Image 1: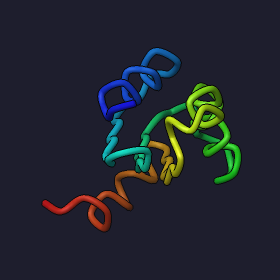
Image 2: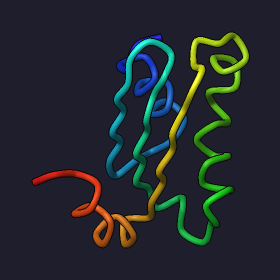
Image 3: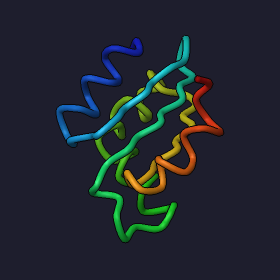
Amino acid sequence: MDIKELQTLLESKYTFQELHVKGEGSHYEVIAVAEMFIGMNRVKKQQAIYAPLKEQIASNSIHALSIKAYTPEEWVRERKFILPS
């Protein structure tokens, strides 16, 4: 699995205000910003991202996955710490 495939898979399931995917081999990092995360705790946000990737995780196409999921409001605060300008 490559970065584009992972991004396409997530975008086919959800609507994001922003989605950043990086990684290589079978190790990936996802930063997702979506209104659907409003009212969810951190675990629920991560479960939402894991859900459409179950098959790829089970087949080891994705071995390691770091997830940072934010509401648009949270992203306004956190963006400056995560993405360099």
